[in-house]
Length: 343
Image 1 (cartoon, rainbow, N blue to C red):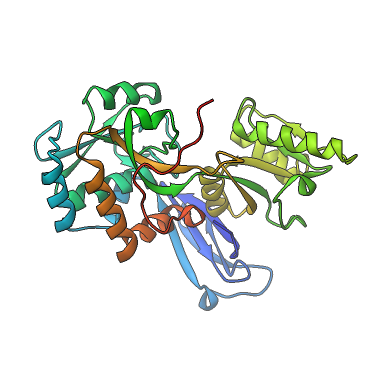
Image 2 (spheres, helix red, strand yellow):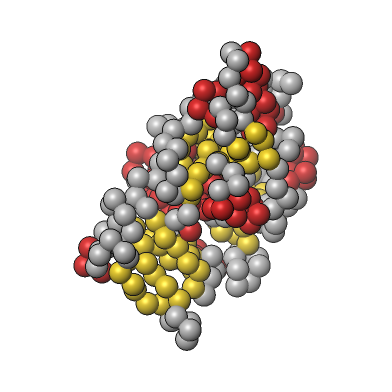
């Protein structure tokens, strides 16, 4: 999400409350000593009447009530029947998701019961189930367990930030619904406006995860800089997100290069960072995030129809807006799009 409106957020009773104003923060929502929310004008003199919009990330199970709704899509229901798909549980769409241990905005357990799946991936699963005329039946799994579970027919589908790869396409069918992006995030008042390639990182100190694709990209860019006689970026590594954020805020690092979804959520929830550039998660190749099911089981055509219907009718954008993932939007869902090449 390109942050063109500064955002400020605090967590009140499990709800991240944001105050958004075009061009600046108009009203900051603060937590008083008694735990109630109060509005304070910002130094630029903005008043409550100038508040353009308020957005909330509800991290409790009540968040389910705000999910976009969808009636069964006749074409999808017909495709489901024509494909001969048989659900694991009659009348239900059993969806594998890494609920526990997950992080906003993708999929995670509600803060009040540590069970209810929340996040964009849970919203998409619910929407798909609705469109198919089935009951959404989430099942918490560890990431390492979903591939065998899908192959064995233990689960019908997974919506869990799964990237399409050519290797995975041999075993699963995919219907895409997001672009896989990595993002460069800097301090909100940073002078850095854009990072799009090697020349933009010259001399910068950048936080990156060890052994990640982000690190591989930066190392490749540094090689190009050094070959051109330019100063490479300094890569630094932190064990936890809080330490990384503090490094950016204190000026010990210029930018954090991370999965865009988590960076976008943090930017929206705190207002402390802004997005200045994105890179495909499969750089130099492009990559898609998709719903995955067992290959040839007759489900994917119907899923694709539901996703395209939601894209055309607005429910899709509602989900992206709910979780700050506007920059990962696709124009249409594709069945088995080109995947990342085999390693």
